[in-house]
Length: 450
Ligand code: SF4
Image (tube, rainbow, N blue to C red):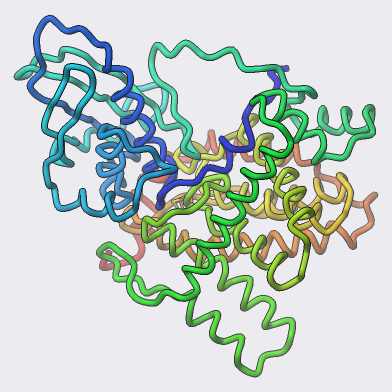
């Protein structure tokens, strides 16, 4: 058993949209390169810097703003503090200066090469960042964007992670610990977070509030904004017009669903606009959990304390999916992004409503089960179609999964969360690469004029 050692705040990260593996990961790689060259001693002074993008970073990187993200990282910007306006300004190809130690080189998005989509690197989404003199490579780092904004690099010496207080690698082991220790799930996740990161419970709650407030801000901004989203599709934002329908003469059940949908559209449209969102677990799926958070707090009056606890339950579900399968569209398709987001959201709603672990697990299981096999085929390489509407579907399915899990006869629930995660991993392995964020099949091909 390799225990899960991911922090809650590695899963929930604040950063610019529209795709964590295409923006947050590459920006972190650029930032890492900047820091790792600070003490570099080269015999020959470099005269240029080159970034080569592979896999879906190449296929859809232009639409996702990967070139701007990696350049911003190389210029020393971090995803959690960069201004969207600065990222947008890089699109005009203006030249900036890469400064690291003794090295000072001109840098713009012109230094980024969209290289081969098919490749034999250990991870499809690979970036090579090079210092060059004429055509000679003086120094090179090979980075991998492995989904959800997480990166690795060749030759990386893995940090020995701190040992969690309650080590588990899957749902069954988690259940065993909960039974033995008689702890609540949120308490177990909190104690693990403290053991892994050293943060106190107060510090964790402050960070959780920052995550929750950023999610709600994305919803608020989205429901008050109209107009076209960036890119050649010409897709009009819908969140505001959907939200305004709640003033009309619909029944209460319809109004509830209209609002839940509007909130998911709102946060997803903010993501598509490249604005600040929270990976949950990725940027492409960053509308599902904010929609249910907003619904729970603003429409249903659930307390912040219970919502925080729900977030910790959601994190446990996300950890298990990431650890035993993947949360990257480029690895397993959209089942790993919106599917996992929906499972996390279902767990969140259930736990924040005061239900126990078995209902929480069953809600998460149902939500993921009904996303199995879902491909990733963003039209034109933009996180817009099907992504935005899909987030709304994920939020509604999460709510429905909560309803089923809390009213069904427990004895009749046959499938475990571990089993559905295993099915997702296998389905992802069998899925053609055409359906893994390369925009080479599915809607990306069948939808015309994009
Ligand atoms: S289809 Fe799903 S996995 Fe692919 S970019 Fe859109 S949200 Fe992400």
